[in-house]
Image (cartoon, rainbow, N blue to C red; front, side):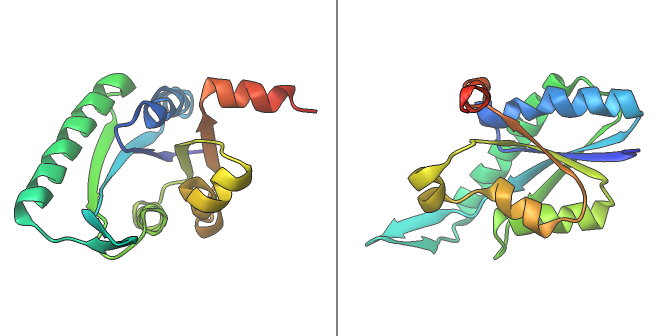
Length: 156
């Protein structure tokens, strides 16, 4: 069914929640599993506007941090067939990079975490997960923080 699963990580505790879910699915379906880390753009906020700042030293630091995140994530996955993909953001938004990687890799399922924000927080902060849902043409499994998922389940 899902012969190739793509799981995203940014190294945060929240994104780490999606890793064992993806690994369990990969074991169940005997799937290839691609772990995706997107090297973020270095943004320099100035007077309420964020500018992309191109510093070779900062870029090298972001790449090194990404390598550490991928090594840690691979240990959490504990799945021997896991492949690693580290992609530069360039001028694209995170959700656009994820969609491009889904298409390029031929992934049949995306597993990613979500904050599960609603109301004003969602309006102002937006949602990478929601944008990915709109951009890709494969199923997307969203993993929420346990407290957010429990709160949502209790809401009538």
